[in-house]
Structure formats: C-alpha cells, structure tokens
Length: 212
Image (cartoon, rainbow, N blue to C red; front, side, top):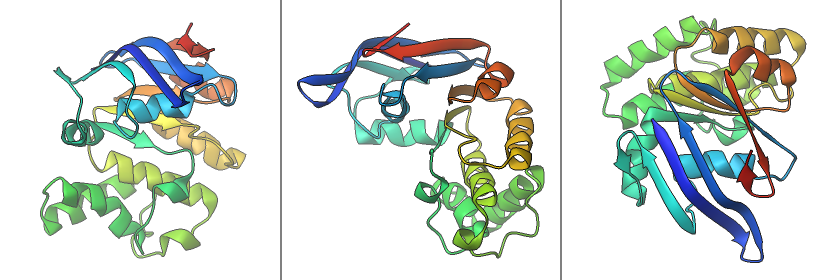
C-alpha cells in the first residue's frame, strides 16, 4: 500500500532525523513504530502523507510515486492520519461538522455526508453528540471524535500517532476495542506496550535515523 525507499529528512542539515529509511506497509498489516522521544516517529507519519517533504528518497503510495502536493491529496484520503493531539485535528464548531468535513471535501453531497456522520458516530458509540460543541467535550470524547473524522473518509490505512495519549483507563480500553475491530492496515506510534501488543503484528524501531 505504501512504500518508503531510502528516505532522508532533516529540519536542520547538520542533524538528520531520517537517514536512509526503507519501509513498507502491506494491506491488512499492522505495524508498531517505536523509538525514543525525538527519534522522528511523528515526522515519519507526516512524510507518508506528504505533510513534510523528504530531502531524498522515494514515496510510493497506492501504486504511484508521490512527489507533489497534488499527489498527496489522494493519499490523505486513503491513509487517514490521527494526530497525537485531537485539538490539532478538530477545528469546526460542532462534532457533526468536524466529522462531515472530510466526506464533503471528497465530493459527497450534504445528504451523503450527513448519513456518513450518523453511521460513523453510531459505530463509535458517539451518537447524540452531533450538535455538541467539539471543544467543550472531554479529552476522551475529543479523541474519539477525531478518530470518527478520520474514519468518515473511509480510509484504507490508518496512521495513529499516540492514539491513547492522556486517556483515562475506561476510554483507553474503549478506543483499543474499537481499533482492534477495524479492518484497515495500520502504522501505530505508541509508548504504550499494551497498544502495540494488542494491535500490531510487526514492530520496527527508529534509532539514529534508521529503522531496525
């Protein structure tokens, strides 16, 4: 589905973040991506969907090499990125508007988007929150709504950046149950060993700019 070949990236030329990374994600595969704080895990996810641009290397996603911003618009619809902080993902006044944003930008009609919102929120146990002000929800609710906003685009892969970060135990377990039941391929960045053990079938680690 997604392949990275000899990827190099640095915010400062003298301090490479990624230094010749090779990686692939196959359909149905769930990969845990580990590494120390500052190792480049979030940058790795952002590169996969074109939010930052490598200085060298090649990104092939869904059968095509991706180079330009236009190339990555399709990738972002097919590989949904769940940001580490839900507040970075949610920006509309209400829950329904946040979840509908992606489908509407994919060209769905208002009626189609409304149906997708209802179906997605029901699947995540968030029915009844449609008209709530997003930023007045609890942290756990915002995390689940941000996942709903990603799933509403019907992605084929999920890129999850610390999905259980700062959640209470009940919400954490609920989110884990939801993620475990999804069919999508996943790349999971998490320091939570239970998350990796339960969700992943392969594990890689970023060390000094390379995958091991």
